[in-house]
Image (spheres, rainbow, N blue to C red):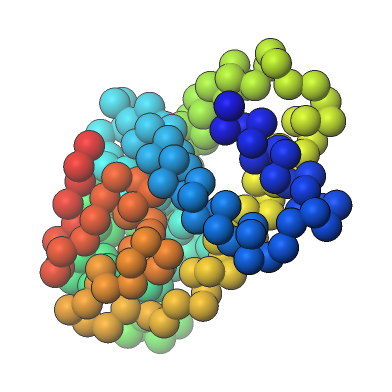
Length: 203
């Protein structure tokens, strides 16, 4: 099973049995499976949310950003989409009542933050995902394996941040040009892709 393979590879890396080149090759081989099975639409029950995977992802980014707020430009960079697409996405979050705009000290600056309804929605989706994960891992995993799995996921998250930060911000009109490991990878992992100023949902 893939989780046992990941655990074995994690132990091999920690013990020095595998080179960075070999690790990179194995990680690249695992990425398609991870991207498909751990995409937003597959993880969360979005039926009651009435939001697309990309909108849920943006809402979570906003609420976990420093100060719990972001500018539309920051959302565009993080998702690898254009400003018009980011503005349209924020419009949908605002109209759904899960986000709100406010002006900063500089009235030219507009911040986006999650509303109490948005916070509740993310909390409900997260709780549902936690229950699904608990069911999936409660049998067949001993404590050392679970600890190694959690530590491995922490390292994967850290690696993903490093990869994302190494990719230049998208050039207007070239939002999808970074490939699977650039900002557009957010869409790959959530079943989405960008084309021009539009975000297409394949779910």
